[in-house]
Length: 88
Image (cartoon, rainbow, N blue to C red; front, side):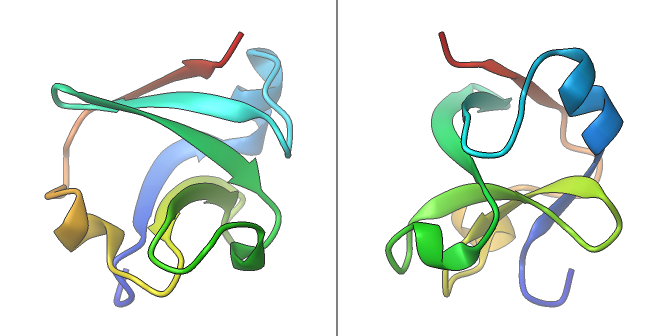
C-alpha cells in the first residue's frame, strides 16, 4: 500500500485453519529470508522500526514495519511468494 505495508492474500480464515491467532509468533519466509514475527493487534506492540504482522482492514494478513516501509526495507515486490507457519 502507500505506507509500504505488504498486503497478502492470506485471510483470517486461512490463519485460523493452521492454528494461528493474534499474539502468536509466526515464521514468515519471503524469498530466502525467514523472520519470526508477532501477529499483533496494534503497531504499538512492537518498537519503532520493528517488523510485525497484523490483520488489515481487508481482513487479510499484512507484513508491516512500525513507523517504516516494509516493502522497501524487505525488498518485496508485487507477486513475491510468502510462506508462513506457526512458531512452535
